[in-house]
Length: 147
Image 1 (cartoon, rainbow, N blue to C red):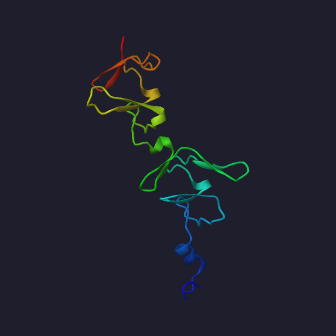
Image 2 (cartoon, one colour):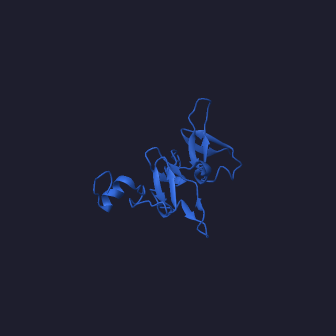
Image 3 (cartoon, rainbow, N blue to C red):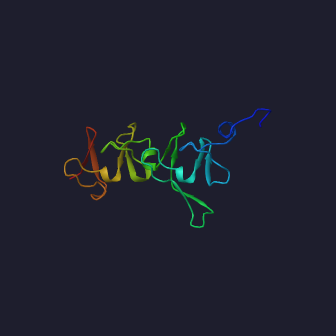
């Protein structure tokens, strides 16, 4: 009975109990929960929306929530760093997380081009620019080592 209204358990939960943003099940206060402005998650449900990689876990003694890096978008999307990146690698066209990529800008006003460190290779010989000492030239949007 709530405010002189008789509610079934399902209606009560829908009105008064927060639900997990991932699975939609009730997020009970006795559960281990992760809260943010975008919602509430069970620890086991706190995973990348794209690849389902776990982004949190409980410590061995189940007293602490351990989380890895994650990206939470304004729309409530939850992603691992690779899938949450707003940058796309110019070499392979996949998302490029900041810690696994380089940004290259040629010219003062040029927009930086993003590459995974493994994709930042000479277009002609396919050797890593890092292995070649970092010396390169850009020609028509392509990376070339400097002979």
